[in-house]
Image (cartoon, rainbow, N blue to C red; front, side):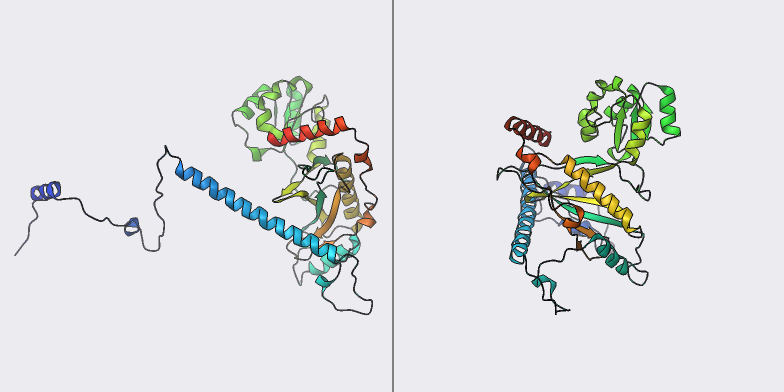
Length: 361
């Protein structure tokens, strides 16, 4: 017997029958192995979903900050407990965690890293050599800390193995603009058209590293100050002047030093510096490191209480070994807060207000 379904009867049955008591889960319509779920949003008026997401993000950020704080406090307690505890001279093998960490001269630390970077092991003699600097951000007030450190310097031995910095030049001189782009390798050069492109998103943030400008653009460039942020050219940071060619060359070879705050530990900041390649001579690495440290000392805030630098670690990824450098051999043992002690109260309040305004912006 052949059964034939009448469409009219089917429509009549669907219209008169009650709705089903249950429905299939969305996973029934997915392919095998696909575990995606359709996102179900709460009522837009109540804003429940967005508030839950925000609270979860804040909770995760707080958990990370608490873990970072606990780890830092345990490291500080261990360092204070082991201070001055050194292994006996007749011991050749011992647990390093039971004694005060050894402080290495730069030459010995580099030699040890080169042994690990041999072709038989990591084979990374041409990799960059980094100095991880822990900056002191404490002030005389227990609840006030320095937000971050920002400065730049020109190394005595250029890091030619790294990409050259991309600079935008603001000038009304057509000949200078063509020279900066064609001969000197500027990212872009021009006048108000460049500012309009910056204002409308014509330049992505990752397409340029800095901006230099002629004094004629000191006022017009303020239109994009919120877009440029710390890349805004001013006479104070040395990126506004008459000689654009010289400024462009200087900005292309200079190195920026921007410290990174540590979550949950406002007392310190981290600063990673590229000294050169591991295969470089020790003298070249030493010169670059000293140049970096001098720039940090000059740019440190007057409100820093104590030494500006807490410690310096020498690393060369992917090698896991970390060498604590001996600061006494780098001229940092006498870097006290004499500069900060002479700051007048008005200047201190002015600097603190400026840092708070910078952080809020």
